Amino acid sequence: MQYSSAMVGLRERKKQRTRRALVDAALRLFADKGYEETTLAEIAAAADVSTRTFFSYFASKEDVLFYDAEERMERLLALVASRGPHESPADLLVRLIDEIVYRSGEEEDLTLEETRLRMRLIMSVPPLQARALFLLFDTQLRLAEALCEAYPGRLGPLDAAAAVGALTGAVKLAAMAAISRGASLQEISDTARRAAALAASGLRSLG
Image (cartoon, rainbow, N blue to C red; front, side):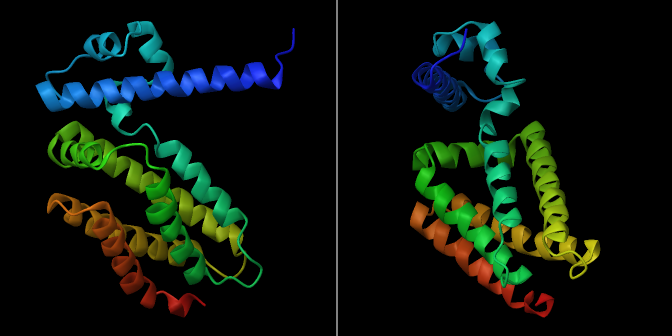
């Protein structure tokens, strides 16, 4: 039996609602009880689903806070693969930062307070710190590999890795510093853009 496009669309929307309910429930519980004190079963119950359903969406409690990581990564890789024929590596990297900061910000389905809570937890809970560092490292490696593939014979692995690390590291650290000071979303975006501009000025030698 084949599903119609309408049925597939309905099923996908239901999955998105369930995932969102789990994220909302987890953030509420983390804010009220603390991350370490909150259990998977409590998150599932607060979202009105079973623990088994929770594991259909997330492999662990940590994953809830990084629910959008892979989706954003795939979007960035697609941008690199579709780079313009005359677009320089430096310009492409700056465009990636615009994607991260502006489009992601426009589509962000967390409130400012939820975003601050998520970042506060990531910066203060050791397992989340480790996970965030792993994801940052993985993102940098995958983007560097994609950058090499996008500029064959023009950009080597070392140059690509250094460029990606410089730009993403500058933006990430500046944004986290702004969040820790209680900045607004606009201030966070502006801070990230300034950091990207500073880092990009040193990447123009890439062409």
